[in-house]
Every structure is written in C-alpha cells, then in structure tokens.
Length: 298
Image 1: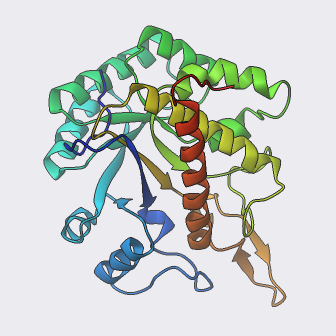
Image 2: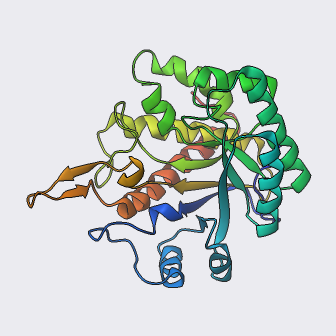
C-alpha cells in the first residue's frame, strides 16, 4: 500500500498548496514572479501563501524556511524504482512523484514497473505517486483503470491536462468519462495543477477563469480527487496541490507575437498559480461538503 503523505500530527486531513520550482524560477521578464537569490525567492513564495515546493535541488533551503519539500523523477526500469526511492528517502522528501515507463510497454512490462514502485515505496517508507502523464504507462485512461484493477493499492499524481487534451475528453459523453475515471480520482494523492483546453495542454485562463468550460471541467476533476482522498484520509494526512505551469522551451506555455514582433509567453504563470490556489481552496470546500455525513458526490 502506498501511504498518504502525513505530517505526523493529529490535525484533520488537509489540502497543502505547494508550487513546482519550474513555476517559479526562470520565468520571463514580464512575469510578476518574485526575483532574487533562491532564498529570497522561496521566502517570497512562502509569504505568498504557498506551503511547500517541489524541487530536487533546493530542498535544504526550503526546509530551513519551513517549507514542505517534494521531489520528482522518472522510472523506466524496475531497478530504477529501488534506487530512486532510496535517494528520495535519504533526501527527506515528504513524497515523490514519478513518470513511469514510456507508454510503449506491454502489459507484463507495465505491471512489473508498478510492482517495483509499490515495493520500493513500502520498503523505504516514502509515498511514491505515479503521475498520469503522456509518454508513460498511464498515458491511456483505459489502461490506467486496468492497472488499478490489478493493483488497487496504487496511488497517483493527477496531472489531468494530459488526459483532458490527449483524450479530448469533451468529445463525447464527459459524464460517462468521469464515471469511468472514478477509480483514478479515488486514488489521487498529489496534483500537478495545469489547466488545458481540448486542443492545448496548457492555457492561460485569465484573471478568474470565469465562463470557461475547461476550467469547470478541471474543477470537477480536482474536486472528485479531493473527495477520494478525504474518504480514505486519517489525522495528519495531507494532499499536495502543486501548480506546475511550464515554459515554452519544453512546449507547454504558448507564445504569441507582440506589437514589437517578439514572441512572448501567454499570460503570467506566477499569477496563474496564485489563481489556481484560490480555485483549489474552493474545490476543497466543495469536497468537504460532499464527504460530510448523509451527503454524496453527484
């Protein structure tokens, strides 16, 4: 069983708003993101309300500042699962998210990878959450649900932009798709927050995201995931909601030509992360209402 992330306290289960380092460092000049040396930037990140950061290289500074620290990696062979889990535990990450495989594995190969992750997570006592991501064993919703049937103890980092865009979820009966995906939602214990459209994996949603169907759809996926977590959570457990809005060099942030003929990023990824935090809090409140006695998720 992959454990929930837990702080060792008796606090009620909670949502922790983190941010991915690539959503903070290296943003373009027009962004309002905090600037300075890593310590100054992380101090500003904490002052902005974020409780942790996902970063493999700034763990020590973040810990000194009282921020939670999570890590990430990629596992392409069963042997790598053991090695990475040991390293993640030694660093002291609160939890660890991973891309697993390439998506070209047959069923036996995919199952061996999952088994290795489960064993390594338990052996080194660090929660390892398999990310829903294109070019990995979870790139296909149907196959991911089959993996859940075989390994119900699996837990996920829900990066739903890969499904929303890659599967074009709006094409067809989206409510039926939510129902089919429910076993995935029930097992989400970490979220890489990125909103995409049916045609683009990452889009700017403006100042408040109002009136956009894609925003409403991501609200539904996040809320369903929070409900799944709350139904299973114990005191001290928390779920990290981590905006991960990435740059154009790896083909995420869209760029457009400005009036000077320069290609510039769409919007401000820092401001979008702050907006995501507000949306997540609303989804969390909704999930709590749904898990209260005598209520259910529609």
